[in-house]
Image (cartoon, rainbow, N blue to C red):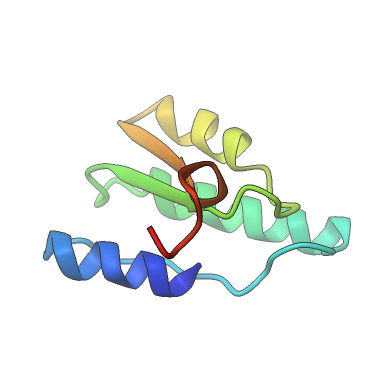
Length: 88
C-alpha cells in the first residue's frame, strides 16, 4: 500500500505522506496507537486536507480516523481493494 501512497504523492506534488507499516493482525494496543497518531497528524493545524488510503482489510479503523479528522477539515478515504488493488 505504501507504494500506492508514494505514487499518489508524486502525482500531486505538494502532498506529504504519513506512512505506517501495520496491516492485518495487530493487537488492540498497537491499533489504538496507530489510530491516535494518524488522527493527531490529520488534525494538526498545519495540515490543509487529508486523503486516507486504506487496503480495506487492516485492523485500523479508517472510518473512525476519517470521522475524527473531518470535524476540522476535509477528508477523503480511498480503499484500494474496492478499486481493484494497487495494479489499477
